[in-house]
Image: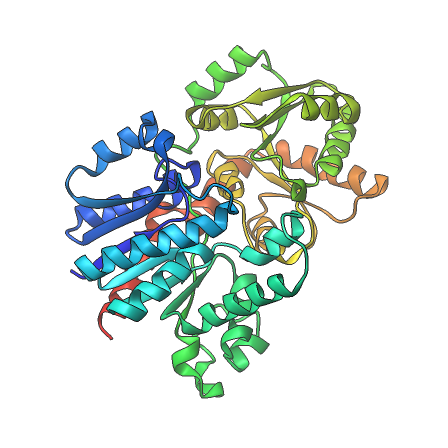
Length: 422
């Protein structure tokens, strides 16, 4: 079995890694692969309950390489991650010479590129997002010469990686253009990069691109009638149609539009209720909710273990995204989790793969426009869908086909084996 070093830009106990990284590393190690895990940590994360649980899970099957980031606090967080992470990756690769470095997002890609350049090995750029576009869209950095250099360097890493993994077909299309995949980039609807690679003379380039969606953990996210009944009784929402939003409060989630949809839903359905779930509610967001929401609702601050039972208590999920490059080329993990819990999802038009999946499996509603008429039509469609006895089964099937953990791990394993054989 080849050896793999998984390189993360967050701590091992981070919620995203619970579904996107930890199960992969655990599964590979149980199958006999030599696996290492490099993560960015500090004093608090290394002593957390979640980190202790992960270390016990891995036992001595996984070599852990925590990179402490307590120093140089005056630098931007992502700059410190790259500096300290690169030093850590260089040291690990010099001593242990992993065959494959799996870099999850931009900062680990820099670390893996440099480590393999000095000490050998193949590396995977598991992009997950458009790093620089996100920073600009969130207002964390401006558009200047430094940003343009960052965009250029990211394109360089995409071209240098031995394998590039995109999270959606829309992202794959963008990376194909950067790599120079000829007809691969011009024929966006092709389901497989291999199909048209012979037309362009760029077989080796096209073959380096794969699509692996964000996955969900089927042991945590599923339909559980007993858990649903218990949680609904606890929240006092029996016999109500419940909409739910679960996730962060970052501005690209279009909360004003989701609030408008919920208000119109509750106008037409007097049993309507909305749950707004996040780990970061504060006084400002509570004032926002009071201003925008006119129907019955509740704000919930959830620990990771409480997310699944609360999703099971709802009837439909909400996911409105801004129509920017970083959002239309990704699928938030909440989308897969909604479906896995048997819920149809309400999305806005133009958001790429998520919209296509909703339409293909008939597992939700696409809001065509944000006018009153557009919202009314979408509310009517949702009420009709909630009366469909088969919608839960279709939602679970869509999640299983598109986002199941086993499916993602099999695709990653194929990427590893392909690189190890070259």
